[in-house]
Image (cartoon, rainbow, N blue to C red):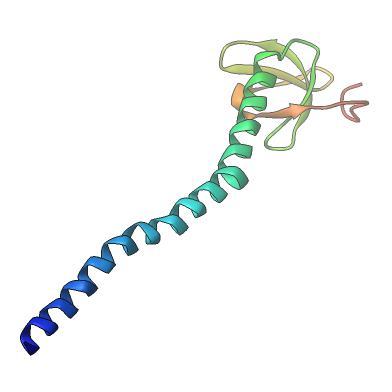
Length: 110
C-alpha cells in the first residue's frame, strides 16, 4: 500500500509540470512583443522614410551626408549623388550616404 501511494505521489508531480512549460513561454512572448513595438517597428518606419526621401531626391535639393557634408544636389544616378559643397567644388557620394534634406538656409551653399 505504501508503494502505491508513493507511485501516485510522483506521478501527480510529473503531470503538473506539463502546464509549466507553456507558462515559461508567456514571458518570452511578452518580451518579444515589447522589443517589437519599442525597437523593431520604429526602426522599420525610419528606414521606410529614408528610402522614400532618397526616392524623391532631385537636383537643387540641399542635403547633409552621413559624414556631415552639406551640399546641393547637382547630379543623380541610381547609386551616386553629385553634391556641390562650395562654388565649383563637387563631390560624389553614395546615394545611401545621404542622411537627410536640409530645411532653411544652408550656410555653405546659398
